[in-house]
Amino acid sequence: MIVKTAPSRSHNHVFIPYPEHHYRWSRRSGRHPYRRQLLKQGKHKVSALTRPDSTSTFPEGLHAVFTADYNKQHELVAAMKGQDVLIITMNAMQPVETSLKLIGAAAATGVRYIVPNELVSKREQVQLGKDLMLAEGQIKVCEHIMSKHLKQIGVGCDFWYEHSLAGTETRFGFDFAKRTVTFYDEGDTKITTSTWTQTGRALAHVLALPLTSEAGLSIAQLENSQVLITSHYVSQRKMLDSILRVTGYQESQWTISHDGAKARSGRGMSMMQQGNFHGFEIAMYSRAFFPDDSINHEAKVMNAALDLPKEDLDASTRTAISMAGQS
Ligand SMILES: NC(=O)c1ccc[n+]([C@@H]2O[C@H](COP(=O)([O-])OP(=O)(O)OC[C@H]3O[C@@H](n4cnc5c(N)ncnc54)[C@H](OP(=O)(O)O)[C@@H]3O)[C@@H](O)[C@H]2O)c1
Image (tube, rainbow, N blue to C red; front, side, top):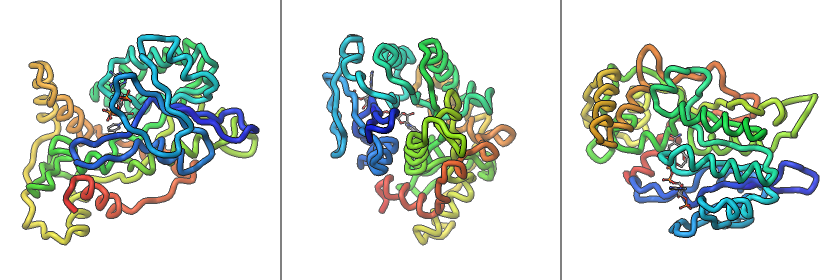
């Protein structure tokens, strides 16, 4: 994604290699929160990058949509010329090398900042990042960005609350259609989660900061760091309580079962080793809920510095239920 706004700003183009985000599991489509919130904020010119054979569709309000074959560097370079920021939001399962191609083209065209595909904090909870099988690729991408003398700004949003709650039982354990939930252990382990809106808002606020400032927060202070944010630091038990409040169901109308997070994560890993890709999600989500090392960045989040609003858990739950096609 590329952003460009007022001529007085030097960091004003943003480029997102990312189209409409179709949530196949929810039968509804949404837009990636970065693009939606940047467009809503209206301070940048936002463009998208897509591949020639893509079936992606794009929302109103984009400055441009560029098409490039990722194997043809000159096409990527042509798309990125004049852009200031490259935001990578491509499919998370793509090999790191695909991101490296984008970064190589960005470096050749004077793009100043890269926002890489990031989920978890690779610095605060190093072992957890490794266990989630995401940190290694993230670190490789960051090293490549530095080697090209570009600056990177990461946004660590952790699991998206609505996406994970509305997803299948292999995410936060909930199946809305069957009204069942599998609690990891007792269901009382809290994890840091972010909503789509908060994730997008955080990046939009970061990119609207002055490049440098002696008076307050600036982009320069965030260079080569990861901006951690939060929406809800919450356990599955509290998620279920919220669902009951929002839907009016009684707990007796839901079936609760339990599975040890550690044992389940091990099973997920074994499934992956046997070539069953579903194991990835099982291993990843259950790892996040290990009682002695769950995802928790609450002490380091930058919500206040970025002036991010406090969100209502039940409102986020309502969105998840709607995404799951249950409202
Ligand atoms: N925090 C969370 O809980 C969470 C959860 C899910 C996703 N995410 C984030 O959301 C973003 C999208 O993730 P996703 O996995 O859901 O993506 P996705 O919607 O499956 O794919 C996004 C886009 O990536 C591009 N793409 C797909 N395959 C590609 C390839 N081989 N080479 C180059 N581009 C390719 C496509 O764009 P074109 O077809 O237009 O080229 C595609 O529409 C990522 O930033 C991910 O980290 C976060």
